[in-house]
Amino acid sequence: MKPAKWRDLSDEEIQQKARELNEEIFNLRFQLSTGMAKNPSRLGQARRDLARALTVLRERKA
Image (cartoon, rainbow, N blue to C red):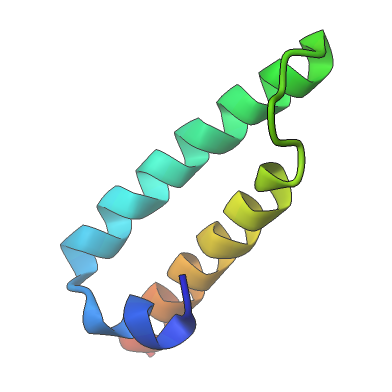
C-alpha cells in the first residue's frame, strides 16, 4: 500500500493493519523455514508495509 493511502486511514485502522502484518510476517517466516512458502517475495512486501504503517503513526505523534 502506498504511503498516501496509509495517511488516509485512522490511527486505530493503522494499528490493526500493523498487527495483521506482524502476524503475516511471522507466518511467512515460518513457511519459508519449512519450505512451504508460495510467494517468498511477499515477506519483503509485508515488512515494507509494516515500516510504512509505523512511520505514519510516528509522524502523527510528532
